[in-house]
Image (tube, rainbow, N blue to C red; front, side, top):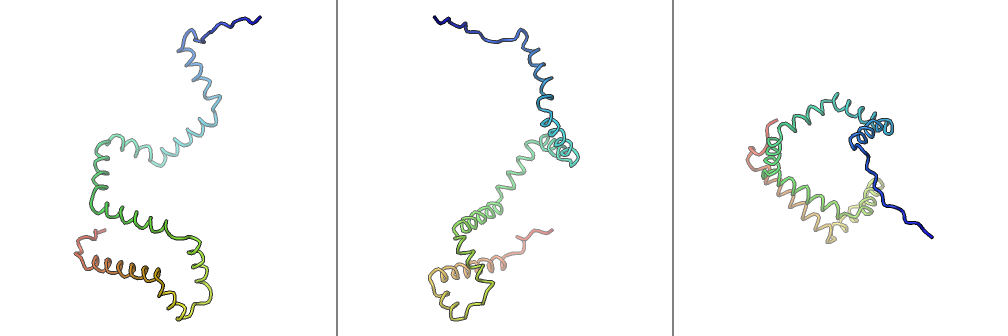
Length: 152
């Protein structure tokens, strides 16, 4: 007949001694990781990154407020929107067709008649209309006040 096993929980007599024992054994068990961490810490110190991080932590709210002010500026919002728009446009391009187009560009140039046929397609006219619209936008921006260009 089976004998019931008593339920026991292991609890060291002194949890502090157990913790000290684990800390003392850790460098032996994880020597490579500890050495790699020391090497990384030394390189961060040599390059001044630790000082930079320490300064950032000390500045705290000042740095956060400055970053928020820079990000929330109207120019930055416009830049981020423009980047997102062009990112969506690039994601919608067919990479295989682009590869074929670029591969053909190195060969014999197409005739003027074949280029004229391609230029009359709906997609080509849509692209040309967009290009002309972008040229209008750039031209208007160039005509605007020169105060938008920061001095360096």
